[in-house]
Length: 383
View 1: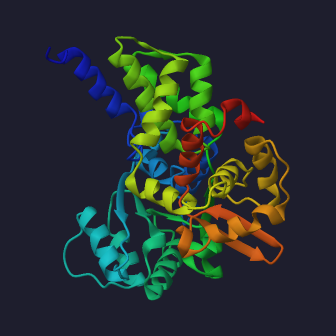
View 2: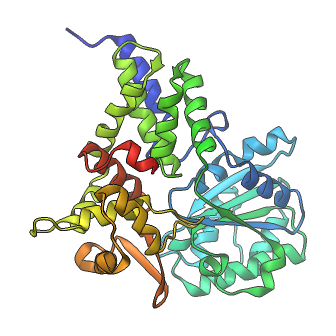
């Protein structure tokens, strides 16, 4: 029997609304981030102010940039928004060459901070110039010139605004220690999303589809996403698709159960490989899977860091045994080595170490895999 064209159309629409592999690019689907958006809008409305947005990978920084033009139109602020992504091999001239191309600026221009400033001053339209993935720019001279560009744009109160985005723990880590530009920058830390913000993603998406969801199902999607919007999109995509395939317009708790399995099975190969390398061991009864899962469940700060001490409680929930830090300290250290794929990053002084998943996407995957394999229950997740 051939597939129902109507059902295929609905499934295609679900994939357009819930997009785990791409940032949100439509204001009507954008959710949460009120405080961060307010900070960006305030900076854009001030001559001489620019924005640097930083945080973990996958927390939605690019999504904010994508919808800023529409957000500003809601405030009766009309401007053109152009965006470029940095590449490892970029230098200052190549980066601004790409920007000028998007601004439709032609002719010979001096590729220096002052030359950039004069070129932008001659543009009649008001612009938001977004430079994304700044952490990939390895040319130190380019970073210094970029800082000098911010300073001269601010000193001359040029109307256009720069918005710099990158994965970093601090502005200094992203731009280097350029104290002369601090007064010209609004620094926006992008933390992981709150449970309510993640629920808003689900609500907005289902509203676009004319569908509804059980409260318990929505709560599960938000909780299992660990603050990362891409996982909310991923779980909502699979749960909603399952409901549509069953000719329903209401997403139930059982659909989320199917979504957990699908999310594990269809995860990116790089995530699967990282998990397998970190947890694989020929020794029966080894604790690598348990410790990595406990790391995924450990309470974290706004930048995703956790301590060895915070791993103890989830270890007890998973194993029903009390483990003190020395029982799994070697596992934590192993996760920072190439032998285990360096899935954790360690910072801080001895006995005051802080850990973070090198790839934040691995953290929810570890939890979902543990659920799918029966290593933990959702009751154990809640403590």
